[in-house]
Image 1: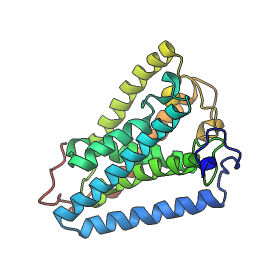
Image 2: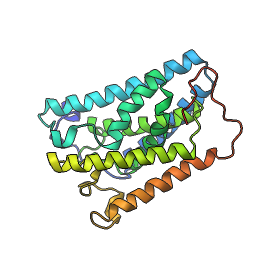
Image 3: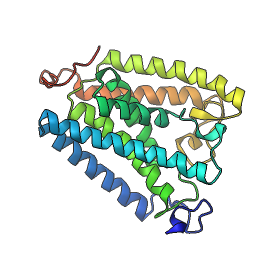
Length: 248
């Protein structure tokens, strides 16, 4: 049991697209489909209970990550501040899911799904393979973000528009610029805007800094367009009566 949470883990590194990775992706996909389907047909009270349960799962999972690093003296300003897109989105998703806060539906949908999908395909689990705590923590965090993103459009009937996507993309750029300067100040690499990550990622196939940054911008735009397309021209998309209408 202790080895499953040990910082110096000798049970085997994370195996990209290994059996445990692929089965976990399938399990998360099944869970998301079930959760959204059940939430869509549930009444207001039951739907609130379900989304709050997901909020608690995300919160406990994220706090456990910080506690684990603190316990082993591995918590550092350069690595552990919640400034990566997915880290920010976890806390934002907790607020949205717990309070049903509609003004934040757009970033949870666009950034929650677009950011977390890449992290699920190429997780930053490092040396920690199945069944280590870090393996599960990584997959739950990003799988939960994807579930939250689909929840707001499936169960809460949020309908993303072009203006929503543009606003989120603009806010992301302003945030990235601020983080770039913060990285230079504290010696970190949050958002990977100052350098590529050390672990395997889609950026490995891209040019060196800074040329991969505009490519990431283009990819984000493509993702956002694809995420808006299913909702264009729809007429059967009114929010549920008991939900707060989205702010456009």
